[in-house]
Image 1 (cartoon, rainbow, N blue to C red):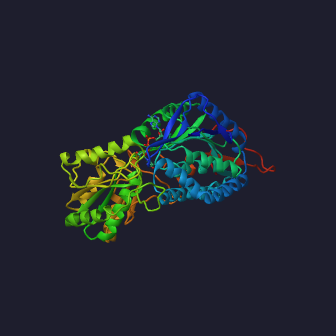
Image 2 (image 1 turned 135 degrees about the vertical axis):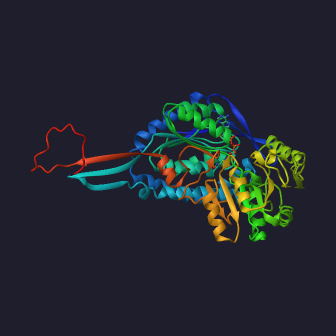
Image 3 (image 1 turned 90 degrees about the vertical axis):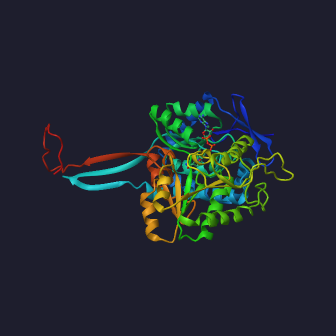
Length: 499
Ligand code: NAD
């Protein structure tokens, strides 16, 4: 069996506590790997290595940092397939989808390659008599990242490339369900020339996370995961005096107006609801059909969903893979099984699905629930599986009110040909990321990603300008070089004024 150990100080470090957790191939149900689970002492050892590395990395030149980042970008590019294969083997998503995740992570490395421009600072000359003011941004120190299972490469890459480009050192605690991709990312960073200790990977569970949240030498925490854990991370790390951004779960709606291209809307709904088996924080999980189009739209979605090919992620014919664990598959199935009793019409029931030759995989088929009630479990909870709920609204206003009543506010989309309605939607909808005829509006790397309400705790979205702000702190330097020929003003107890 393969063992995944920590990556600390630029090398593999075996788990000293002797605790290991199982990693399963979701397509076969077999435990293929064991992953080290760090104790608080092991987390402390990694933080100490990162703290030591910060002494020099925090002082390194921008030229030295960008040299490493450009080399890293090239190595990642050359290793796209290898990273995607690690993702598929432990997460289960199909290879093409895993490649998409790597590509979106690379965008942030590319942004980090341009850190020279982003960290230029500001200078005002002659704000007063021979006085200049400069605003600079400096790194924080040791930063921790805690990441979810559903994007084992992309979400870590939302964090550490920018954090280290800004001069911080980093301790990553990836999901224990699919840990291998994180080690590959760190190994490649070392190969690219990142000095030992600048990027460390510590594997573990709640024990490791809580050790990071309370560690006095961790300056900031970036978290991405489910809403209850995001809330815990934000509360605990804030109470311990750390800067925190904690991105949580979602229930993303797609509002379809009567004038929309219904074929395009149905294509988009199927792609965004069932891609990665619905295990995306930006998955569309609720379609709100406005006016009389509901029946036609549901039929178009059903026709398309029935054709999706389910199978192992490493089979090029598969469009959708298995779910992460058997327990999660059973939980997802329970929402479909309970849907009719809570008032929904079950158009497609994906429960009980299996793939020949892979009977122990964590399979579930595609489910489509129509006339879903807003007080039902299938609507209220983030299911995180291939289950699409359709709701009906009489008017645009009713649809927007329904979406805005959700406690989540990650992404949302409108499908329409009416520019005025789309513009109104952008302004009225309560969510952090909005798509107009775009079902999964994940911002490009040079904008920032983040939700509202229970989808994000903290003030900063992730990556883009918000990311650079999060990983740096401001300092303003006021300088005066008096003219030696002038008399200085002497003692003056008044508050300094500019003139
Ligand atoms: P999760 O919250 O269970 O786990 C995330 C991380 O927290 C993991 O590293 C895990 O080890 C750790 N963790 C789990 N339980 C913990 C506890 N009790 N105390 C401390 N740490 C704990 O999330 P997941 O199941 O791995 O990922 C899926 C969730 O992540 C979904 O809710 C999804 O919407 C969300 N997500 C959100 C975004 C976003 O950008 N908003 C992106 C991806 C995933």
